[in-house]
Length: 389
Image (tube, rainbow, N blue to C red; front, side, top):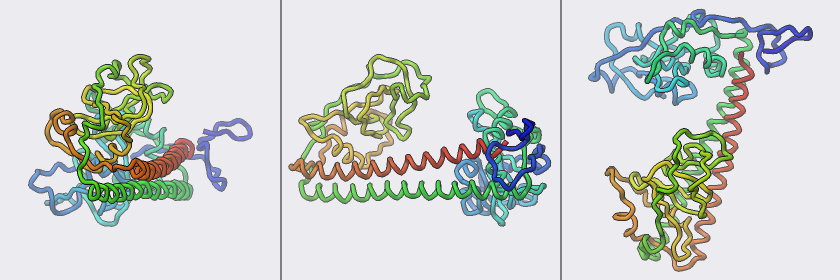
């Protein structure tokens, strides 16, 4: 909200294009949508036919088009008429494991009719609005709060057609909708480009790493057993006691070896691992991370690996990733399978250092590109918080 020269509170956002001056109008969602729950076809109908929008399509796309939809289902009778999704329709996530995610929305921007599933609510377009603007409006903090309070449930949270119909939204003129959606869409396009840059850098790093290590293996052969070069430590004393993690980076990070890596932070001042660089390896999944800061861990499944006989730990970490270690067995693997493993290790430290420096440069470049991505995401969040009411 903003005020005019007479300190009158105006129904306008904090941040606005200067050519627009009128107040935004409060509308019920039913001024723009007719709500309907989705189709629940039997399993034998899946796999062929018309694209079938699910919750994952809502969550994983900037906006939804026919080709982006993953699943298909064979329609019958009046399915396309009753459950068809057309250009400008809004799709809502009907059910969620967390209250914060219930009712998340996306927009369908394709002229080809799709169908939608039972865990989705369709908002059929009946009013005059810019579809992409409503995609952003429904993602804005105030709109999300209005939707979340209509959710219900205990272990699983749901929102109904009736709940969505009671949500009120502040909406500007169609001209201002178009200007806002176009502007934020530019940010989204840059976010997509930046994400692609990072993905390509990661692929390039892997390709160069694999080329270099294949060359080393061909030249030196499998000449070193991992147990000769790595010590391991059980993580028991470093396991965090309190599982309600903090969100404050001033405290000690709690780590896991998988993709999540930093689960949160703890203010526990005792039994912190602070012995320097190490590899944390999940003894069950074989995921690993190179760590050079103090930490605590979540579980006893972690092995903490450190350098033995002055080997360069970074090299072994890259080699473990190069091996693409995978398992489907739920058992501990390190002592029985990883320690006895032979790898190629150059006789010359100069070769190892050169390889590790190259990998380090890639990681720093990826880290910097990720920082820029985070700044773009923060900018978008700022716009969603300030360009909408």
